[in-house]
Length: 612
Image 1 (cartoon, helix red, strand yellow):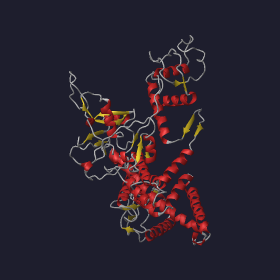
Image 2: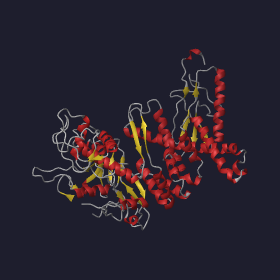
Image 3: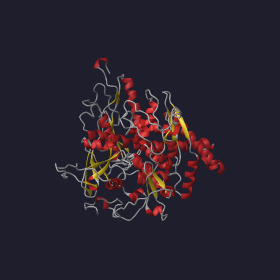
Image 4: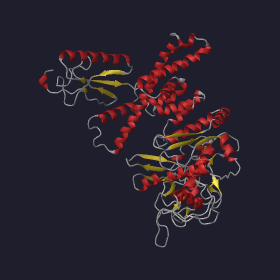
């Protein structure tokens, strides 16, 4: 090119495509004719090799140069010989066997968005579609990555086995050792090439070298762009002790979509996976694994450079959940007397450390609240409370006034505990089918705030001394709990319990927050209003008009960002700020407890009203 022809564009010319064709533009640079000819030769050889070696790829006549460019224009290389006729670019058509059409559509969307100005003026729904497209492409690329890791492993097996025949020539006792070395060597190579963490590389190689029948559904989901490697490897690790056919079937069920076509949220995915794994695990092996995990319980701290530290405790799930529930109840009780000085997170931390550090003590003498504590916040203690941080009060007889003078922060904090009175007891909430409870079948239980537990644990919790049972009556066709109404704004305790039981979790899309948690609101779908005489004129206070929502979800709905309608079948159809729709249903207790009763496939979509 002549020096006076002006600046050339360096890089790759416009990339785009339609109809499943990926258009790859010509690499251009400011070069002299000799170097240009050499560059063309390299590109031609590379593209001919691509066509020859990759199944499903073929040349298509077309032009993919810069907009407004033409052959011979400044900055655009001359036509490649025998590749695109007279056009200065080429298109590579990718067959379904290489890239399924949904993934090709995702690629086209990404290329269009990546072009200069490609996202200018798009609405929220279109922008969200690009985010979805990126996830689909990652899933497809992850599938190719897994295949490549498998090929790498097969190549390295001959190295660790000492010959091209691999482990076949080794004694039986050494084959497993050679395979382990091959996996480790493969991890070494991937780690060195990518810079990824060793744990991440081990997960990749472990998945890639698993029996193909065990991972077939997960691989298919990745290649179709329906899931990424992150979820696929979680399934593979969770099912690695199960029968391969069972493992593959579980992958089919948990890597799919919700009934409304949207993906399961990550907590929902985890819960569905654990329930199915528990159902298929050998009970003896499961109990042995659980007992070993409990035996390995412990507590440890992690110190931070900023002067704080973390305390972690592991133990049997019901005990840990009970401790957390008690901690939450105490923190909320204290907040009512704390004058708004501490956040709920701060109260949780303070209560936990106070209980662990000082335990419980007899009632303490009253002290005068410091500024910021509301009048009347100090009162007699009923039952046990937490001990103060020092022995300063030990010499003061109970029931006498403390010494004159300012109240310390520590004394003031303990005054708040005294105002609470008797601290709440620890408790957990478990949902389990009657069949599992009676030992007729081995389903699973749902431990609120934790997730699924196996039948043995569920019965152990249910039959513990002091347990209180309540019956949930469900519709045999849908597995949903049944309903009733009162003539006031706030539901009575029985109705509130009914709504929370019916919903199970809050009704926002993807939520797994238990509806019985104290942070959960009951929202009037149709706002409750009344006339001057107090007669209701708006939506009724009834279970059919009340739905459990997290505070964040409630605020989102109140502000009009997200809205929902309820159909006659009791399904909530949400519309998000971008116009997307998501559908949520009442808790399916049959699904929750792995109780599978015959039902019509169309039961949930029926327009007929439910039987209540």
